[in-house]
Amino acid sequence: MQPQKCMVFTPLWETSQSTKTKKRILASVSEMHGRLDLLINNAGVFSNYDFGADIDAIERIEAETGINAVAPLTLTKRVLPLLQISKTPAVLFIG
Image 1 (cartoon, rainbow, N blue to C red):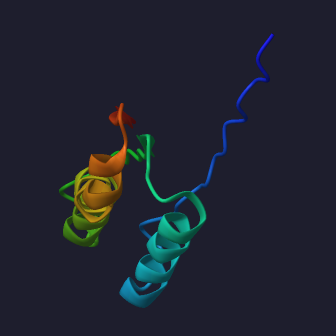
Image 2: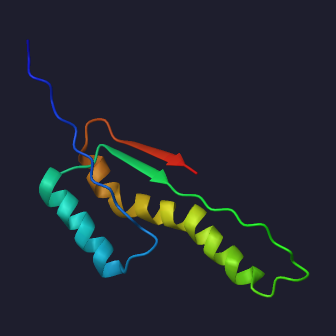
């Protein structure tokens, strides 16, 4: 019987960190694991808007779009070199 391989999960947070922090996290993943087999983009927020009364609607829509669309796509782009090293890379979008 062959020993089981251990799966290692490294959580990444995209939306609330500076570019410098994001680069440091990705460098750490690269150094520790050398590749990325699976990226799970798990983000999602939804707000109800009253376009007539909500004076901050545009800012809230922009923030919501950033979390739901921009952040997962930019993170995927950033980790693409690590995914390309994997024999079986996968990207999963949830949210």
